[in-house]
Amino acid sequence: MRTSLAAPVLGPISLTGWLAAALLLAATALAGPLLGGAARPAFILGCAATGFLAWRRSPADHLQAVLLLFAFAPFLRRVVDLAAGYDPSGLMLVGPLLAILAPLPSLRSALDGDRPLPPALAAVLTVAACVTYATALSLFQGEWQQAATGSIKWFAPLVYAAALSLRSEAEQRALVQAAASVFLAILPLTGLYGIVQYVDPPAWDRYWMTLTTIMSAGQPVPFGVRTFSTMNGPGSFASFTAVGLVLVGFLRSGWGTGLLAAPAALSLLLSMYRTGWLFLAAAVLFCLLFSATRARALGMLAGAAAAVAAAATLTPFGEVIGERLASLGDGAQDGSARERLEQYLVLWNQPDSGLVGNGFTVTDVGSAGAMAIDGMIVSCWVTMGLVVGLLCLAALLAAIGRAVDGAGRDGGIEAVIVGALACASLVQIPLGNVTSGELGLLFWTFAVLSPASRPRTRR
Image 1 (cartoon, one colour):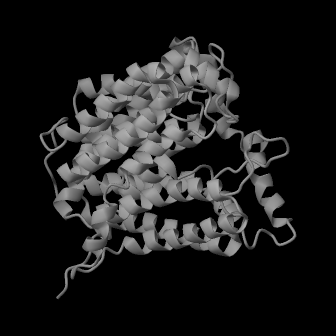
Image 2 (cartoon, rainbow, N blue to C red):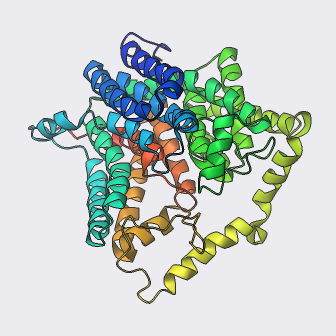
């Protein structure tokens, strides 16, 4: 079994990128309302510069910086929107995507080298080909903006994953530890903000909820919000938080860690996003299978049960949480589940059964008569068509299988955590997104950090 030493919370390799990202976020929060619309391009350029500087420092440094940017960019977008007017395009959210494209200039030279390519690149390249097809469909229909938006959300995480897959084994283990370190700073901030948001949403959140077409965020009133904290929706926040809790829970020890993570755990419950809850449970249960993580997994299960019981009985929002938890056992009586099943029926009954796909031109779900798009299966079907969509899904499953296999063959704690996050993604694929934007970053980053994703040495 392989073991490794835990990295310090803010080690010397990570200070530059972490600090640059934090300074950019703080400066935008303070100056954004004064600059108005000019804050948007300034933030995007700042993200690109931060990504470039952090990547030059180290991949671990860069990962910490971009996780910070993705966690807080939607919050800054809302703050600026309140002062400058609502921007339906969400232009500022492009900033973190540009930050993860920082490795692109060096990627070509790395791929041109002599060494064998990582096996994980097969899945990455397959999905990239499918995204190219969807982009072409959008362009053929004259949807230039949709093509640009959809392609960068899907392509940027793939480019980043390709770059990380080429790093050495030591660097890849350091990347997992670096992610745990920065989440130790992110979770208490997003968790506390999420609780405040649920109790009394700030003005910028109310303004955004009034104008946005996202239907899952609840109502902009006290105790009416489905917590999305600093992120762009309950699903994104819950999935991001669940990944952070797994990393921190298994890779950082001490009573202080539990205190720092507690607000995020409560905010995760207040998101009412059951897929995020199931993701977290699946990851912890996976870790029960391995000796390196079994004791910590048992502790996390006991702690989670105590936290849920306390939240459901000792807090003013316990009744809401209890009702939502009870709905997990509703099965066929669950309205949300029925709506998801109906999506497949609607697609199959189309004249061509969605064989070709529509590209990145899906009508906004906030529009009258528009069908909601839930889960990767429906998303790939609608966007890429039945044939190419199935190819894309097969590549996702191959990436997950490789990460799970790596956990079994390696047995080290980082490998097990990567396998747990990949295995838990099986819950998200039929119910939520795993491939674009911040969730694409999380999925592909950890999928390619599996020991089974490293190139085999030539004999």
